[in-house]
Length: 564
Image (cartoon, rainbow, N blue to C red; front, side, top):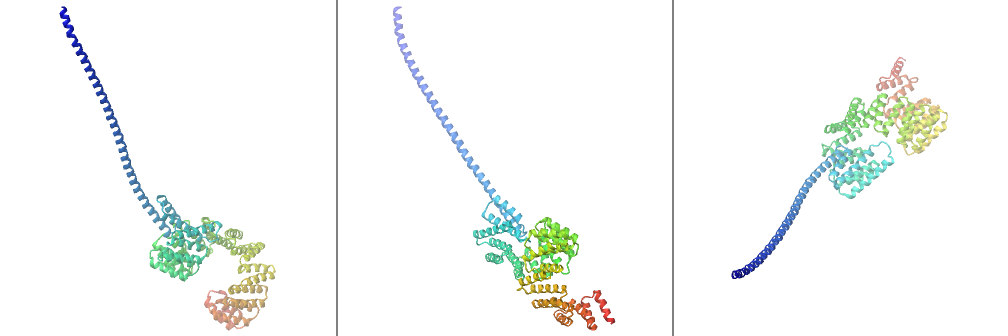
């Protein structure tokens, strides 16, 4: 038993050793496994980190690529949009140029250019904007019928500065020179205007607009034959250019070629049936023809107002057409319509006052002339006409003041001298009357025609006083200054009234040689001879009646002479 126990003990020792060894191996294995697991964890972490970094890089790259692609898309869209804007801007520019050069409408042209600048702000558009803005100022200035205000003069000078700036920017383009010429034309500096327009035509000889502007410059200087030469070239080279025909008509009308002028206006209207300026001038031509064609003139002016209700000149001309027929109530209505469209329309105010004067509404006429004088305070004619209204309303002192001021403005105003002299004469102040005439004669000593009018006026004063010797003496001086059938007629008249019958007959003989159809001279001859030489008187009456067959008094005188 003991031996067996000892034997078991001996056997258990190696088993324990083995167990220890096994435990050690297991521990080592555990450590290996733990290390391996940790290594696997570290590797997994590295893989996850690399994956996450890859994902981040992938996102960054993708985002970058998408951003680049989006930028490219946006750039493409911007480029296409810019192309579209440039095309639209070009269209606005084309419309603007057409609205100005074809339709003479700078307001709409400038609106188009503003749209163009908003879409595509370029030097060319800015240049055109400055040019048309200046030409708009020209349109305003050239259409004024009164002196410039300070603001208008500043506008003219600003536009002139703009024109010179355009020339400096682009010295080889005509627009700056055209604008410069037009401003000088508005300022009536015709020499500078011609130099500028010639420079424009030197740059571009076939520039139709510049050629028409040159013709208008010549027209404004009353060089109608030269204007005709220029404008005929325009209508020949540009048969579809309505402005050429318009100005051709205006030039021919100024040259008294009425029928041909009408043809040119009609050609302009055929090209553009709504060409209000051409229709208006066609109406003016009808109104100023002899005899006046009131029906056609009014038809034209009404047609203009249908196209453009703000065309103030059409209302004015309608008023004139009724005034010529002494239909003053209607004339006054149209003058008021013209003034309502433009308070500073001097011509309409002037003629409104004249209509009121003819209607014997003198106080209203005085007020109307006063309103006109406010627009043109240095217009001597307005003071003379207001004075005439004051005379007829018995405001003699006020009339004298107006007449004296008119003569301060223009010492050669014969109408002022005549009215003032008559006022002095009627109040018995012959010396003052003669002094005024002598003052005017001294101022007009280098003007033969005007001097003749003044000597004629002086002679009338003497004949009013009954001093026919003095009247004849002064009328002879009128004849010396300017010999015409009229100055000779008044000489014969004063000679007759002064019982200088032989001299009167000699003067009448001279008139018959100058103009054998001057009826007043034959009437005076008959009156002179009816008690002296009835046969000669009858012959004079018969000659007169061939010229004036409706004169009842002369018909009766003929019957009386035939009986005797």
